Length: 312
Image (tube, rainbow, N blue to C red):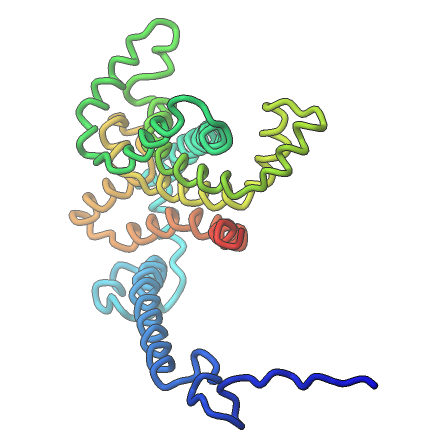
């Protein structure tokens, strides 16, 4: 004779007591009110972030007359001449090329050195490990403006070094790229150290057992596994390097070596006298395009990198 055991009674169901214990989370009046409040705040934040961007893009296609008469109105046509004036007459094309050169070098060096340093700090125990890590973390609180004067003299003196001095010094792409690397390394090491710690140790041990050297283990096993975090951090560093204004203002004093942020500042200053506002907005759109394109391409990888540490 077999007996069947009745399923346990769930507390708070519709047939028994328990009040609201069986209610699903997020279905009460309070939770709905909080959800509406959060949604309204996010909508408001999205509007105040997006509307100035849309206004700048629309203004780039207006004539100067249309902009003066109705700055908030829609353009009657597409004025591609604004972009040609900004690119050639305002020298935005040269500034754009200078920014591409500097950011390419700085981003490559930052991700390379940052990944190697973070991997060692995250996966190896040695005397002074925590001290070095906290030195990098301490660099996060260093104000940029506090370092401008000593940075200027250091970079200027690098130009007088034998052999390598011709590639360094003021008005040097490499010098500006190295300065970007120096200011980006603290956050890069801090972020990647936490990410490398989330990677499974068993895979690293299996690689060592299979005969991988520490160098091979890093390049062929651990670094590919850290790809989501690397892409996320590369995008953040790209935004910071591309929009940097203060550091190149100190180092790049030659008009032909200025980067895009400096060029836009110069264009904004001269626009007030020439009243060529639409060319200024066209230059802003040119500066925004690389950022938008990069984010659209890598948005899924960025989201995966930001949530990888939580999911693990």
